[in-house]
Length: 268
Length: 268
Ligand SMILES: Nc1ncnc2c1ncn2[C@@H]1O[C@H](COP(=O)(O)OP(=O)(O)OP(=O)(O)O)[C@@H](O)[C@H]1O
Ligand SMILES: [Mg+2]
Image 1 (cartoon, chains in turn blue, yellow):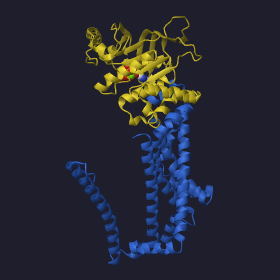
Image 2 (image 1 turned 30 degrees about the vertical axis):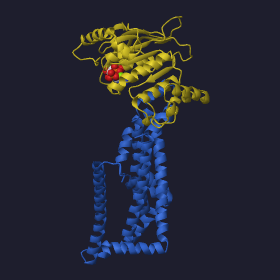
Image 3 (image 1 turned 180 degrees about the horizontal axis):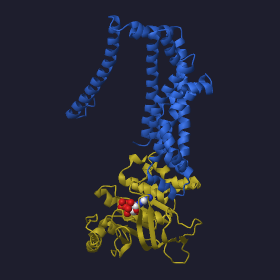
Image 4 (image 1 turned 180 degrees about the vertical axis):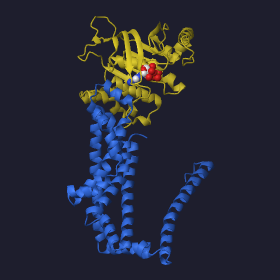
């Protein structure tokens, strides 16, 4: 600690540090307690390990998959699909939002459709998508886009509309056209809200990818989950779910980091 | 109807019996109910009026961003646009937080696609001259409120405006800063020989800076009175010390109070 700090401030910093440590402690405790309870319940026969698996079995199963490298294959496939879906969904959603911003009348016409489509359970269309698009990666991508694009459009468009009127008046007084207004003010000013919209998109993407894999795939974590369920290997199912949680948390953390950078860029 | 003033010696800007009505689905709002005034070349004109009376509307008309519902706005402008180049300044400095001070100042030239190196030299000279030389590469958040307003002014000056429109540029600053910064900004505008129209609802600020003051009525707005500020001193503290300052303050205060119960803002 900086020796120049006053005693009072040092005490304050110590207290804060203690608080942070306590919070982290309880967070870790919850995870540990959860796994311990699960493990114990399975060992004492409170839960049937055949149906509920157990942490040790799930990890053992993962270890086996890790050794014969199939884990990398499946996790890799799913991660690649999610990354591609996220990228395509963000670009497509951003592009559509831009078009709606550019043509306000189109936006007004389409507004109720956006709202309705956004609230529809688009996953329900999954089986139809297979018929239309075929049973391959393109189906998975289509399901993902179906789930993520509309909510991205709505989020990004809201960001575009938040931009300060004064900035736009200023650019107009410089003689800026619509494209210049977008390039110089609307786009940079809405970067943080666009990134926030993308944060929601992360969750949507994973839903789309896993459902897509449930429906069509021969590989990937979604496939392992379905396969494990069919042959009653719950440790495979639970293990895959654990990996899935880790991957999606990682992707979310990445976007959250990007958001923090973006806010800094705007001086917030 | 907007036309260009061509007669020699004519004012830079003239409003002739201008009406402006806003339309919303619920109602028609007559913001301006026959406003006539002239802005002479090189003068510092202040529009003083209660809030919501249509001051910002007058500036939008002067900038050609709005057209009058009736009456006409004329400019003396040699340029082919028919409107002199406008420099806008707002309550919130309106600097783009993601651009450095220099890049902010170059926004106008960039939008008009003017040769940048030459403009850059001009901007750097202005920054140097008005005490921001060391902050060329800083971001707006690193500047104090007063410095930000100065940077915003330099941004408008970089576009060689024929007319400066200032919409309550100091009202976001605290009282102390406001007195120094307003004097500072007005001083620069005079030194650069610019014509300015400033909006405020602060009586003391109006008398401190203006050559002439137009007092606006409540909506629908008309010009209630035109006052020449007959204090020879230009510098704000000297003006405030002059006995005439108090007299003018009294006149304006009464004028603004006579109409309705509401109190104009001020305090000498
Ligand atoms: N785009 C608009 N549509 C409808 N009404 C508007 C619009 N812009 C302004 N008005 C109304 O016109 C009147 C004048 O507005 P204006 O912004 O010019 O006032 P102002 O004197 O600048 O007010 P303030 O002191 O609050 O800045 C207000 O009553 C406002 O509600
Ligand atoms: Mg206003």
